[in-house]
Image 1 (tube, rainbow, N blue to C red):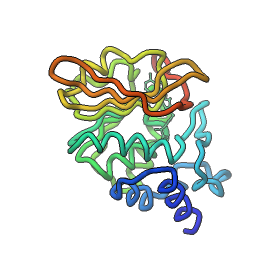
Image 2 (image 1 turned 60 degrees about the vertical axis):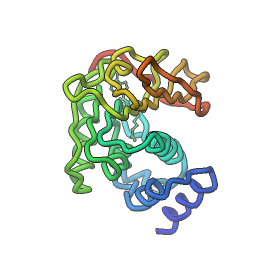
Image 3 (image 1 turned 135 degrees about the vertical axis):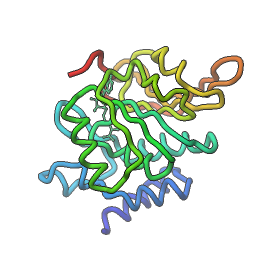
Length: 207
Ligand code: SAH
């Protein structure tokens, strides 16, 4: 599809270099994640509504977060907070052995699960819960990706990161968010700032 090819070229122009990430962004269809009425825009490089006041992330941001995570080395499994419609989940599941994905809105957990099954991806486990608490059962994680922004980094996610592992997380209030990369070392955590970003807020509780 031409629009899909054009999107991949745009991602390269915007600085995405990892060939595995680009290949997966090319092979996973984005239109199946989006309401049919909006599907003409499925390969536009911007976020779009998925219902319940939430959005599917911009392809560039999905690629950037995934690339930063993989740059950290071999990532065996990933904890994702904010499944949404499952698009970022599908990209991750195509690149790592196992994805654990937490979502606070029940209907979106179901939607994400359905989309992932439609793509025949069998290495994802979903959990309907408040992602502020992570998913302790499968910790520690070599990679954690958060797709909604808390005001500050939740303590539980730092605790569930493996030594040498990498957490990619947007933080800050609306209009002042930055994307952080946090690597756990033997003695603590190293933080770097990647980009100014705009994510929906990480909300408290489940619905
Ligand atoms: N990665 C998704 C982006 C979804 S937008 C995609 O590609 O479609 C962010 C998602 O985070 C929303 O679905 C929202 O409901 C969810 N979210 C917000 N706060 C949360 C929390 N505390 N725990 C888990 N999920 C949360």
